[in-house]
Length: 120
Image (cartoon, rainbow, N blue to C red; front, top):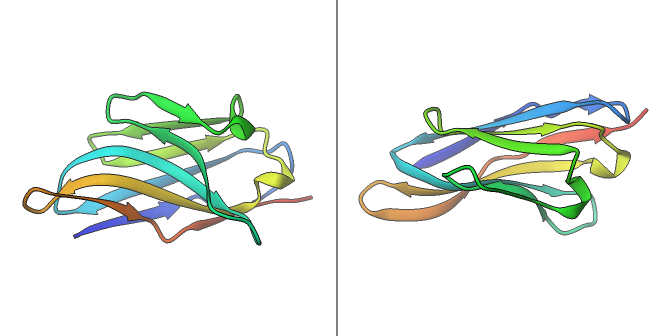
């Protein structure tokens, strides 16, 4: 069907930057909204940013002005550029995509998660 593979998570110092990537592959006809979520220990998964197929974006208040979501439609890839990272950004980051696949099927798919740790 459809697979999402994330990369880019790492340990970074406060104030540092990271860029996450997520590539969708499989029997894809089109990729609709793509987004990034995160889940910190003991907390619920929360939306970080989302981007539509036409490039419209939306961000959680906690990351506005620091994170930028973008996508490459030709590569079915979404990126999250994270700047001015804070310890509270520490979490497992998950990619999500709403995909038209196979024969007239649509579904939401998730990546396996990538760990981002912000600490000195």
